[in-house]
Length: 356
Image (tube, rainbow, N blue to C red; front, side, top):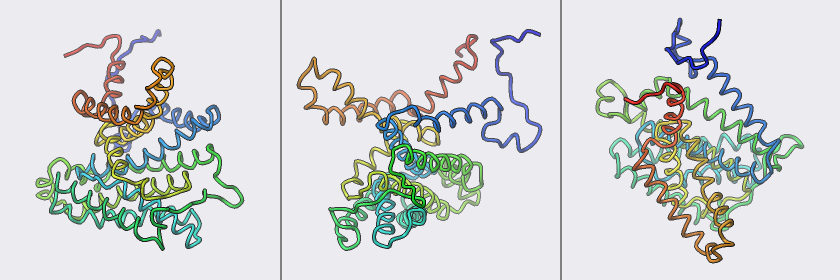
């Protein structure tokens, strides 16, 4: 029997509840995911240390962006304080490891938990506030946290910051770019799997119901205060984890690393990647993290023809950043995740694709 090479998708048929609830329901899709994970696991073996370092930064940003998307994209609670929560995670891990002498493997989860508690504390006003008012409240959290970090010299080192060490297991230290990439990679995989499964649970569905219509969710019996604070807690946990990873990677924490511009960048990640999408957070983190690198490469190529172009690089970065966000909001509000979905849908029916 000769198979048609252009056979089209004709539906999915499940015989039990387990198949229907699977994240990836089709066997070939599951194998494709395993192959992609394997490729990323082998990536450091063929890439330079510089490229591996960029990939590590993208992965750490993706962990924080997923955390922010749980709060903003899935629960509908706007936050402009993610930069400060990154700082809480970084400083907590720094204080626990350098001042109290705890192991990184103890300080790392504690950094996430303490950041989650701080996030839940600032999430309490979310019961009474929403939209722009909630955004201003989280902006206040950004200001308050940075003020404490900058002024509490005896604990945080003030404006000078703190110096951290790389994690280690026994005599092995994660000093190389490759070893730290694998540490980030494992944490990122756990974050993605947890987030994908979170929204298949009662809690995740409650988050989405609050985002879609909080009054209707309350009428259905969802405790708004409980789940809004819980969303802040879960979101801040992952942001704190990202902050701790970033702090030990750069081996320094200081207040200027967690300014309001960092919060804006993380908001841009979930906007460009796609609100309410776990993989969109990943796409957006890679896009926003690599954008300055690509811009610098373009400037370096054109600097021979336009000698004065290097002097306007900083201004160009801000302009390009703003233009990219505007273009996505105007032409594709659902972000890179929707663009990738459109591409897959097109080739699913190719060459018999049609338009309605």
